[in-house]
Image 1 (cartoon, rainbow, N blue to C red):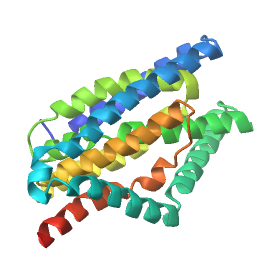
Image 2 (image 1 turned 90 degrees about the vertical axis):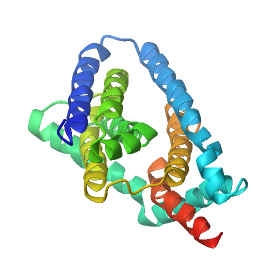
Image 3 (image 1 turned 180 degrees about the vertical axis):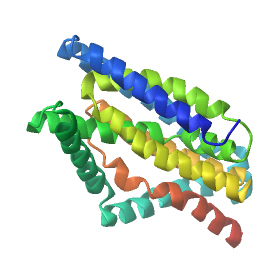
Length: 253
């Protein structure tokens, strides 16, 4: 199977799900769309918890010691959060979403140019991008495809994202479709990196990265559940910091 086919199928599933969600979404009452979004928040919380539990993986604790994994995740979130906040990643992502919304209005003359429509588009773009691009299947699936191990994980992710995009689009509209830009950029980069560097991430580093990604997904779930608008995008550098901190701890042992 050609490298990149998994991401291609993922893009198609999101676009198809978004189209279906937009078609049926306006027929659903507001309370129903709210319940659907809450349901997605709960499912995201479940996936996040399973991912965050990788902090207890034996590969990680055997490599860095029993007390270090939690400190690695903590350090990753703190350093990543400070970095992302200084770089204003969340603000830039929202600004990019606003640009996409205005371009869509000019091109198709739909979606509305009002403040409420703009906020829905941006929220759909940001939340969908985070849900579709921050998680173990994104990272592991893309890397494995690049390594030539097949696209099974990304195909599974495509099915999950397709159903999720239906629900998201019913609440947020076409902003969900715009998230495929982030999806292609991130998954494509990881697949290319896997293809060029081979098996470059040891199991311990992957566990730290996956656990940190799970913690970030909890922030996404909080946003969906309207518990707190966590600036998850500002925390994204933590995904780069986690394997680096793991390597640092290994070097110091």
